[in-house]
Length: 527
Image (cartoon, rainbow, N blue to C red; front, side, top):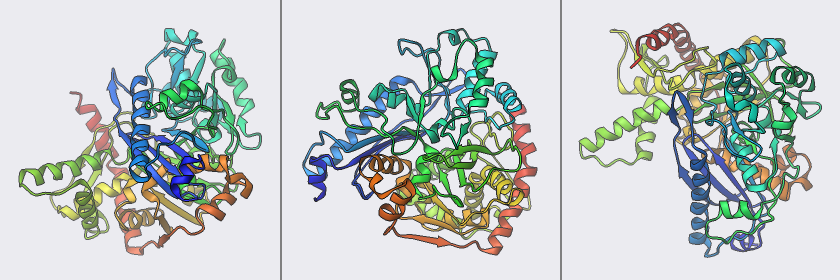
């Protein structure tokens, strides 16, 4: 069938991902070809010291994203979709959405960006002898208990954002195993929450019980419910979408990033570049010891993964590009955003390999890898540093990888983890070669960027929906991706340049030493 008839007959898969600054929908055929897309821009807010989104904005953003996608379909193909082969929902991992027995919100939605759970995360890590990051849902729940928050006694459900939206669409309280790994430790053999840690956790949260309030764990390819009448009405304000569409398990952005880069098998890895920045490596065996800088999560099929997750990625970088955009307007120079990013990023290649002695931190919020609980974006240099535009852009691009590199160094250098390939994806890789070269220097490994890199996690969750609808006949998820999705996709590997590797190491030494400046800024800047 051609695309029009595929859409009319529902032989397509829809993926919607809630990113930090954009909700994106992607419609694909079962071979992963993108047929249409839709977007809704949004932004988190700092409310009473908590990074959050209102659940009303979640509903409105979902509806507007789907409306944008539906209009794109109508414009391209002259038809309006009424059904799909499957739908998938993905979102920023971790966080805390608490509902009562009547599904009423009990407390402000705490996103992954919040670092107000130090006491709980430290206690749980010590109790489990397993790293519990600050942003994990179990840390948020236990912190609410430690703080004596009144709402806890009424908690009936705790969700991540993806699991919450999935629940709204299907009425099913389930979650993909990769997203579940951002709620509570996972047993990769049993493909479920770790039962021994669960017993300990239940003792701490009495009278609540983990399995009664957390979603049930599913793996890729399992049925996760169907679109209800209420879900169809929420998603499609035009009223054309019919109930009954199957949904795949809701996944986190780490899992969809793995799928979007074909990094779901051992010794493969990927780096997702966005508002947060995280690198994943699928492991052959467990790490030798606990590392507070490293999160242990899973692929959407349950393979154990080591994650180096940085809360801060491109926010400050985007802010600087916007400043240059304002300057262009002031000078009556016409330059669209895409051109600005392309020229500024490409110019960074002309900079010194060590950024000429410049230093920057894009810490909009606290950073778990460097154990800093608040953020102060800053730029610093010495009088003798080489302060020019190329070095300025290079240091801001380098620093977006700074915290992630510290975690990757633990895995690759200290733990001796084997990595055959790492793939980059996300908007930061849109400008050809630039971030690909810098990432290769940071991890001293070849880096591949596919032609689909900028599609990101929305494409990844669409592929998981397509796997549920049609891909299981190819076997395991990794077989489906190898045989059908990535078989003919173009992707070029860039090998690390020894001089750039050396330069990035020099920058990293300065980055670590300069953390004292960041700490001083947090103490000094209180307004």
